[in-house]
Length: 519
Image 1 (cartoon, rainbow, N blue to C red):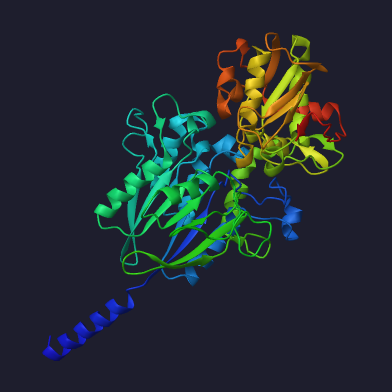
Image 2 (cartoon, rainbow, N blue to C red; image 1 turned 180 degrees about the vertical axis):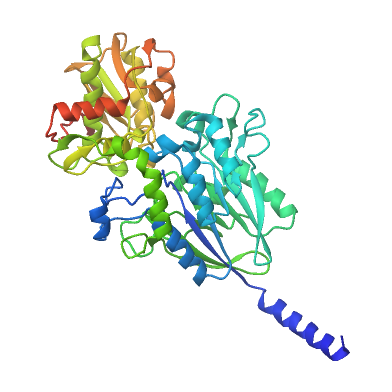
C-alpha cells in the first residue's frame, strides 16, 4: 500500500474513532409473558379469532415477531432480552412445558433472559430442559446452584455479548423469596439482590466492560433499591410486578425509563401486550448520555406474522378439545385483575374461595383461604369455557385440607397482608371468615376483627381450613401452614373445582360482600 493510501486509511480510522465515542444501543424487552402465545383480550385472557380479526385483541407471538423485526430495522445496534416468567399461564405451558417458549424465543432471536420464579414451577428439571433448547444465555446472579446438578454447570450469573464492536455485560436477577414462590428444590439457595448484582458488576468491570444491563425478575420496588444500592449498573430491565412504565399514559406506575441516579429502569407490563423499546446512548466511559423510549402496544395495528400464526395454530390443535368445552355461564365479568385481587376482596377471589369451601364443607372445614397470586386473569360475561378457567387457574394446584389454631390462622392473615403495598401475590382471598385490614399499620399488626361463622376467632380453638397445596406447603410466605395438623394435599384440581362450582350456580353472578374490610 502506498504512503498516501496509508495516510488516508489512518485519517479514516481516526475520524471513525471520534464518531464512535458515543455508542447507541436499542434495548428491546419483554417480561412476564406467561405462555400467552395467542392474542389476549383486554382482560388478559383468551381472545376469540373473531375479535382478533376486528382488531380488538393484543399481543400474541405472531405480533411480537413482526414488532421485533420492525424495531430492529429502525435501530442501529440492538438487543432483545426478557425479564423472566415465560413459563406458566395457559394450556400451552400445561401441555408443552418450556418447549414452545424456547421455540418462539429462538425464532425471535432473544439475546438473553433472566430466570423468573415461575421458571421453577416444575422444579429444576423443566428449567434445565428449556435452557438446553434455547440459543441464548439464561442468567441468575443471586442464587447458589452449585448443589443442583441439573443447573450447576449451565446457569450463569452474568455474561457478555458483543454488539456493534462493544461488549455489553448482562446480569440476571430473580426474587430472593423464590423458594417460597415456586419449587426450586432443596439444592438452591437465594441471596440479597443488591449484593449479588454488585459482585457481578465488579467482575465485569474488572474485565473492562463498562456497559452493564441487569435483567431483573424482582419487581419495580426491588429494582429501584438495587439501582440505589449499587454502582455501575446502567439499565435494569424489570419483571415480576407486571409494572407498566410509560411517558404517554397517565395510568402508568412511573416514567419510562425511571431514573434512579445514573440507572435507567424499564418494564413493559406483561403477557406480550407491549414490546419495550429503550434507546440508550453511552459516552466513551460507558456512562449514559441519554435514555428514552416507550413500550409499544401490541394491538390490532401490529400485523401478525403469517408463519407464526400457522405454527401457534398447529401447537394449539391438541388443546382445542380441552379448552373449548363450555362449562358454565357468567352473568357479568368476574374480576380477577391483579391490581384488584392483590389489594382487596375481589369477585374472582370470592368465587374461588367459595368453590373450595363448598367442596369440602362436609369434612368439617370452616375456612377457605387462597393466595391472590394464583389468580391470573378475569373472565368476561357470557359462556365460560374450561380454557378460560385454566387461564385464571393455570398452576394445576390441588385442594389441601388441614387444621390450625385460630392464632396460627391470624398469623397467616398477617402474612397475607404484609406486602399489600407491593401488590404481592400472598394477599388472601377468603370464605367463611371476615376480617379488617389496616394497610397503614406495621406488617404483623394489620389484622383485626377476625370472625369465623359470625363469631370472633378463638386463639386456642382448632379450625378446619381449605387452601391449595402450594399455600399449604408454605408458598407465598405461608410457612405457618407447613406443620398443620391432619394435612391432606391431594384433593381435586382447583380449576376443576372452580369450573364445577360456576356450572352449579350458572348463570354465575360475581359479588363482593364485605368479608375483607380495608381501614
